[in-house]
Image 1 (cartoon, rainbow over the protein chains, first blue to last red):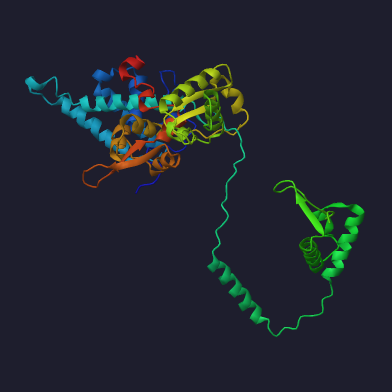
Image 2 (tube, helix red, strand yellow):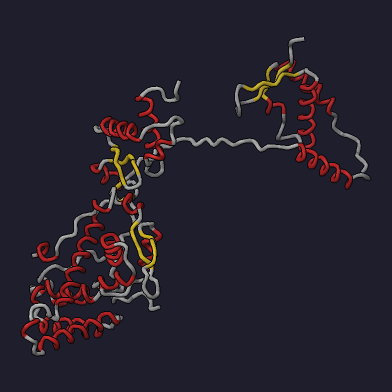
Length: 260
Length: 179
């Protein structure tokens, strides 16, 4: 496959409009040369520039003009695409067919220029609507769509647990525990019971404590935090604590269970 | 007792759905908002009322190819654009002309495009149009080589604020337009 610069356009991206008229100084030509989108584009430009009648194109004139441009492109070493050369050949062919004597009876329909004219007209029509499309407001460029924010709440269904899952999990626990069968469990340095007392004492003075405040995350190590948590659970199990929460994710409060 | 018991509540539901939706909502989408079956005619009537309700506001309810959406009125576009100064890079003429050919002459093959533009189609151009989801392949022409047939997408119509291809700007006749 042939690469990018097929249409002899090298850096014409910012080029927005075809030069429409005769007011182009000759020196400016080089600038425009690379902006043509192909041979049809160039031909249309020439037709407009020299005010030629598209329905009765003077082929000799147009071909000559076209070749001048193509030669110029060559001279400034623009990558000259085959498309341009093909068009040169076609122009010359049309020209030569016009020179041939034609049989009188088909004179009107067999204009060798007809196909070229049709293509030029079709291309120009496309070129114009392309410009119009380009100017239309587009989403993100002239059209802004409402996008009010709302918090998507996804309803996550809790996973279903079967009895099999549970027994499987238990078996895994046993299996893992068996790996540590011969470990001697060291003397518990931290007593859950002791922490139960500490918590109870604290709640006697403060009465109503937020759950997280029972933990001294900064100073206590993980083992102590775990023991503290176990102590809270144990106290709750024994009905000595009341643990309350207003709603999901709001703070949890711990207090002494007063009712006897 | 139905969920959305009266007409104005139905209308409110439509309104909030349209205001928060990421993409245009079709009538099918809107029917899914309600547990109870809502007739399309009812929805259309409510949408019409909604349009009236917002007539004096900065957003307008418009219909595009794939449904309804609220969008800022045109007169505010200039202000809104200042919020995003780095505007999208302009597409090259090659891209826009190829898009125009596909839009107005679809479905077309690469060969058709080359015939009209008189130059070989740059693969990069087709890629840009397909990446933007403006153009896709809708089939193959049953000729040797079975070339792909390209057409514009609903997304293209949405982005250009159109309900259908018939709303594209008319194609001028070459001669009259210029002389």
